[in-house]
Length: 294
Image (cartoon, rainbow, N blue to C red; front, side):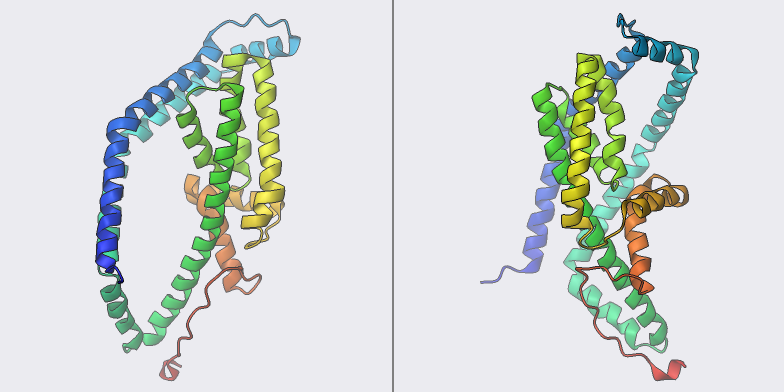
């Protein structure tokens, strides 16, 4: 007996709502507390006097004292506060997206049947082109983001387990940070070593920093030579140099989101321009062109 689609959708969204409620009431307070402790440990690293005899560390301390690092951190904190003030708008966008996706899934068949009417209208040539490019972009974006998502999950699990072995605390907060940064191809793993090194130094000194740098190096090598060939490179096959250039350009064009959507957008243009087709894409249905449009 086949379960109706509407029943599956209702059960799935009810489960999602329950998990969101559980996260807000039980896990968010714990996460906020651990994040506060993590930030305090980084602040203590800058404010507490160091007794290290290592001349290199003393030189770094003197350089930090002479520079305007504290004012820069204060500016960064004020920027973070401005971002936090926008959390209401982000929450509203999330709720509206959730509601729209719910109605879309409920009326998916009706939506598809209604949308096909545009392909039979007097301007069918125009809507057929839109359909072609939209379908190709969605498939390309899905293939690349699926690969990057699996890479981020594997990186997060490996790094979090290693941090637990080293003796790090606030693991849930660190795991979320690592996962978000891992969504940025290649560069995310390298960027994550900056806050992790600060926390490691505040907790265990220079030895823990060395452990963290070694860990990040191992994870980066594992991502570059195992995960990327397995997930990402098997579909995009982009050289690392191109990956970094795309990330730099997309960050300039799209902001922070460009670090996530830059690679999918670039691979979309590669596929459309017939430079390099993306593996794993679904074959698009043949759309008959209207000869009267010429």
